[in-house]
Length: 507
Image (cartoon, rainbow, N blue to C red):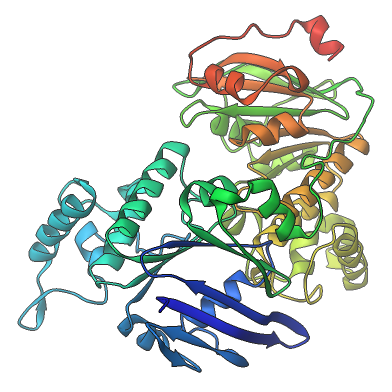
């Protein structure tokens, strides 16, 4: 008898068929993966399991007992707990308060905070050998520590089934490795686990079986030990991914963005880089390398102590993001939900937000022009949305990322700074975003891509700069390097010679 069996689920939202006879089975004491493109139906399926949505047809079986519909309270009582990609813990709470939130330990009518903290310390040490300062706030914890806290919060409910929903999105590699060890240990202790992830390397190394969703249907159940990641990707998108990283062939122009001797105390030192018209330059480095701070400086969020930035030959004195935008720079941040888009606004409002001046006269917006531009971009970028008036929060992650890019297209910026442009995006949407980046350079823009995904940088870039402890440790032509070389450079194991000015000119 399986621990969990979702059978023949159907769910429609208006004209959209989200689930079309979808099924999934998790055997006891196993890790079962769930993969699919954004919009394939994964979120709807999980929300039905959580009791948030009610299926139009089909049933959910837990421990052999079938249910036509469930409430969140029932799901909790049946021993199903969820670990979400968003860390749903109040930032101002202490570790003890967050761990027992909703199930507080009491002394009479009062919450016993001291006991909660003692119990939190004991449980974290017992489950994960993690020791946190007494009274530490959630806001003071690393992403990995918050993740462990969320898992511990689920474990004290003594679950039978744990559902991990994109748990590694905000983690660096070392933290991901730790998470995967924890998940395997929980499986070995007898828990049944459903693991949802866009990262096929995690699925490959972790899961006993994997269900592939496509267009609301389960199209395959495979065993990763017998099935390659490439085959799983093909099943997800229903086509051969012959060219995972489509690369536009563009004749490079003159340098458009030029950075010389840029330095910011305790962040980075003496950064030199050029990005030419029609060129994609990759930038990578480990956490603390200074790459994130460099991006913030180029967009006017932070101010360098010394050095210069020129755009098309003009010296820029960037003091604010508004000034950077006016000069022709665009930034698509990694945190798209909190910084790249406005979830409460519509797709139309997000797409035209960065270029409102193009749609207004004498301070009055032309709704007709806004509508026409948003429809053009929705069609051009293949954004899957019910319509331009739909809230952008209703879109899948890949389509939200297209909106985050599309709003700068309406402004026609000269230089695009893309920070982890495909983080948390499925394989099919990644290809579409790479093609969009290719279109930017075909139209004469210069693109600087910051990414920790080394195969991604090698696939889409013309050149790659590697930062180590705030300095450029190496510069590579993308076609003459591999991931091992980039990683060795990023960790300081080797220091690669920078390309000469003449080599850059002919790269």
